[in-house]
Amino acid sequence: MPSQPIQTTVIGSYPFPAWLEHATTHLDQFGAADLEEMIDDAVTIAVQDQVSAGLDVITDGEQTRLDFNLSFYGFIEGIERETISPRRWGPPAHDQRGKHRIVNTLRAPRGLGVVEEYQRLKRLAPAGPILKASIPGPYTLSGRLLSNDTYTDRYAVTEALMPFVQRELEGLVAAGCQEITVDEPSMSCYAYREDTKRFVDIFNRTVQPVVGKCRLSTHLCFGNYKGHPVGYRRIAPMLPDFLDLQVDEVHVEMANREFAEIELISEFARNMDVAVGIIDVKSYYIETVEDVVARIRKCLEFIPAEKLSVAPDCGLSQTARWAAKRKLANMVAGAIQVRTEG
Ligand SMILES: [Zn+2]
Image (cartoon, rainbow, N blue to C red; front, side):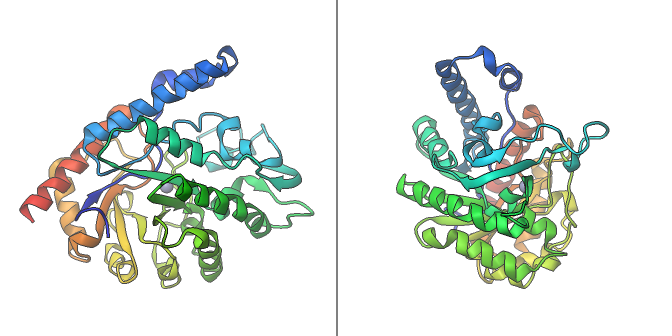
């Protein structure tokens, strides 16, 4: 169960402050201590924004993943950074993301960095809100690695990455993390054309070491790189197989899809709690408190308040910070209003 009815939560990422984004293009001008200070400051700000909004669950805003070396791929040995994207010009979209070549056995002797992120968050966050850690699942993580003669397709790469994610999950639990999201948006994006039973098997084997040891959730969206979706934006192809995901809570994108298939949250709710994306991270229309109230009431037509969490559709990293702040504040105000008034 969520910590309270209509729990307010977020998906991992939060916009970088302008100075951090500027700094990431000049990292060679900073020393290791400067960098540490910079990341602490950035996480402090992301935490402060979320606490000010009044959220029940907060993250570190993924402020530490600021360049290749601090990204998951920077932690993985055996890959060569591909600097040239398949398409370099024109409208921003997924096909401009660089892919990395696998040149040796994949290894992650230093972990993937998420345990350190969680420890930093724990050190910097005030008492009160629940602290959530997010980590991509191995299928999503495999999406930017090119297969080769050893790792012959995306599924082979996924299997190779799975133990790295498992070790990180175990490390998070050992560090005291109570709430973990394993992000697998690639599974929701491609459910319409891939074997969904195979997805569920991959997911469940990934989380097996920590099932029952923390509150586990997954985030299923349809893509948000540069604010653009990439998947076939329908939940129906995920069902019924995704009902077997071993999670306490599933998060689905609804606001940008104008609540299409909202009735399907009752299917998920038979096996798990449901976090519904009621804030559109791709639109600069700021949802009013009244909008939020109406959207929550719509969700409550299908599942009870005790099983419902509300969140933005996806991480807020692709939404300007001023808009993110206002959207979160209104989301929380709307949730409180429904909790009070019913
Ligand atoms: Zn997402």
